[in-house]
Each structure stands twice: as C-alpha cells, then as structure tokens.
Amino acid sequence: MLGLGQDHVASATAHSIVARQLAVTVSYALLIIFAEHSPDSVLGSALRWWVNESMPWVQTVLFFEPAPSLENAEKISVRILAYRHVLVGSLCFALYSIVISRPHWSTWAGALSAKMVWAKRSRAEFERLCEIGFHRMILGAIGATVLAIYLEPAQAPSVVWSASSDWAILRAPLLIGVATAFALLAVTLHAGQRIRH
Image (tube, rainbow, N blue to C red; front, top):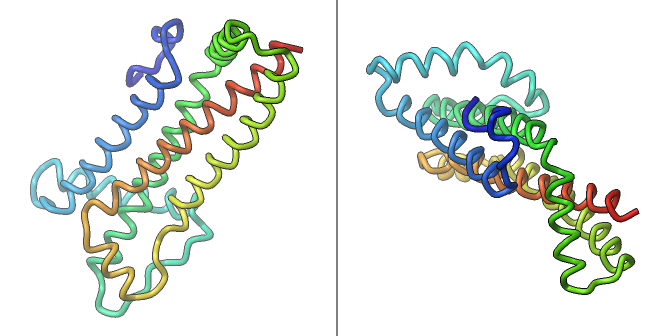
C-alpha cells in the first residue's frame, strides 16, 4: 500500500520511508488546498465532504485544541480546521510508516554497527553514541511534533496572517516528516544498543 507494503520490506531504507511518507502527506495537503480554491469542482466538493465528515475524528484526536473563535472570520476558521485535518492525516500516516518499518530496524542497526567497526570505534563508544543519539532523536521527534500541533497562533492578528496563506497548511506534513525521520533514527539507535550487547 502506497509503496510501503510488505513487498518493499526487503529494500526499504529510513530515507525512502520518510521520502514516501512526505510525498503522500504533502500531496494530500495540496489536495486539501485545491479543495479550498475549487469547492465547486467534483474533486473539490468530494474533498470538502471528506474534510467535513472526518472532522469529529480530527476533533477527537486534537481534543485539547480550542475551537477557532474569531469574529467574522469564517474563512480563517475553515483554514485552521483544514490545517488540523492535514495534521491528523500526517500523524496517522507517520505512525503507519514507523510501524511498517519495524522489520528494518535491526538491519539499519547492523549497518550502523558495521560502520562503527569499520571506523575502529570501540564497543563502549558505539554504545555511548547509541544512547546519546537515541535520547536526542526522541527529543527531536517530540519537538517537531509539538511544533506541528502547537505552532498555531493564538492572537487574532497572528491567526489572520498565518491562515491567510495556503502554504501554512504545508507546515503540518513537513514538521511531521521531520519528526518521522527523528523517530526512525531513534529506533535504529535503540536497536543498535541491543545488537552490541
């Protein structure tokens, strides 16, 4: 499915998984932007229907986010809800990408271990690198995800500026793509710790 199915398990790299995830989520964001500009087209109306129908799920996932409340700003509210829709879609596909990559973790860790042996690094150095790297990658993944979720401005002038740009919607898949890359590096380093023990 979407280039990440079991047929591709033997040949996938972390880079290819992140690239595919970004291609899917950025394309989806562009479709949502298209729907905003062409609501009367067949594709635009279908996408608007899908966004409206899935809104209860989006609100359930982002239950902690307040409803947009600006006076006379219906278009801005629609843009904020579109961003949240793309954000939840990006999060779901990122989780799918991480889960489907699980068979590769030990392979990636083995390749990293082989590079460290080739570089004549000791076992203690390798374990230290894996431990420090793992914690930093986890912090990076959390940081990028928090930025994607909470980067939404709270004050009216900032919201107007941010929501007035179509490209603001693209920050969700891009930040979640960065978070996915950090997460895949983290699981590789964690698996590396187990290989060398």
